Image (cartoon, rainbow, N blue to C red; front, side, top):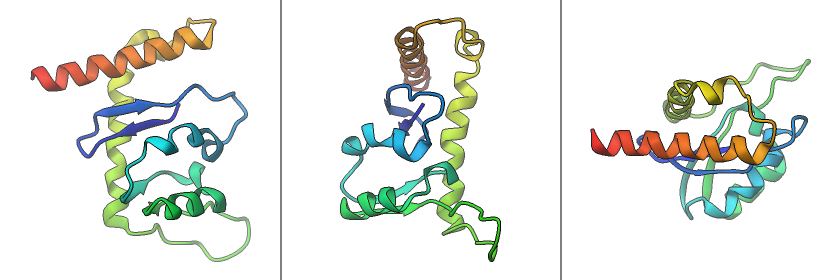
Length: 132
């Protein structure tokens, strides 16, 4: 699942469920039109690709995505560590979603049902944060 969150870690949009073997940097294409026109986008190594970086830069966004580890070569430093630390917001969101047992133990056979429950979980998280 690809989830777009705001600076407070609240979900703004959820991308469709990608097939099991699809890489993250391909699955994010559905959510790219929803991204803001400027700013920084933080993602983990799974989103590292030249095409995605180029697309983000063309939209005026700064990608904060560490390079994938290669078998050979110099170990790379995480780009802009201060900004990359903000990635905890998405990890925290997935931690909150783990509170919904139906999402953790995926009993849903159809992916549309699971996607609907995932979006419902995101809506409930937003509601809890707004109502205090």
